[in-house]
Image (cartoon, rainbow, N blue to C red):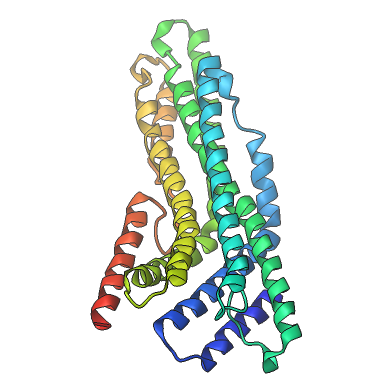
Length: 340
């Protein structure tokens, strides 16, 4: 509720400005920063049950050492890298928040981290809003670490689990033994893999549902934010402070975008190759027709596309990530030409 009021004051403050590009950028940055906080808080509160389900479902994932300690160590190192990336995003967000916090001290024209309407230009209200904005920026640091970090880590886990599942399927050798007991064992292993695949699809669905709406907001903010800040960096009229602000703003936005689209794309790639692993099973050695039909069912199930979407409006993958960068640069080019 308080973030909504602050956003309203940021927008209302634009009414008293000169409608210049730099002031429009300041207004956009204020709205997007407070919007990030508000949307993350709403997402965490409204989807607390789904987030809890995701953490509980993670406890049911197969162990990394299922196919040897060497493989397990490889997967643990990969998750350690994901953890470092999450911390890197935390550090960049913290640096941006500190920069916004100290900017009013060194720049005379900036009295607050994000400019907003102060009734009567009251000195005490300015102090109150400064403290409030710094509190919200601290919240943004924590929410980014938790919310964005959860998506990054869960995508990393899903990618690994699909790889383990493919190894489990490829380890099934029906023709290794011609006895009915061995064939029955292989059939049970295939059923176990099939059930685990359905479980991973359920986890994927919950993860997509939890973060889907937020990605749409991130998409819009990223396109507008990147193109506007590129314009500021390219403009000869921009001051050093404005250019530094543009760089500090683009860093967390670009990282947040990359940490959503690239890990999500990796999960999709791993899930698509599952059908190949199932087809590699020597199903032709199976004497039981039910086993052959079950393998056919598994292949059909694995061929269903398993990708993340932004509220069903667009796919979340590397291709769309590059499209966002191209769209941002195209708008920047158009904006630069119209202001010449």
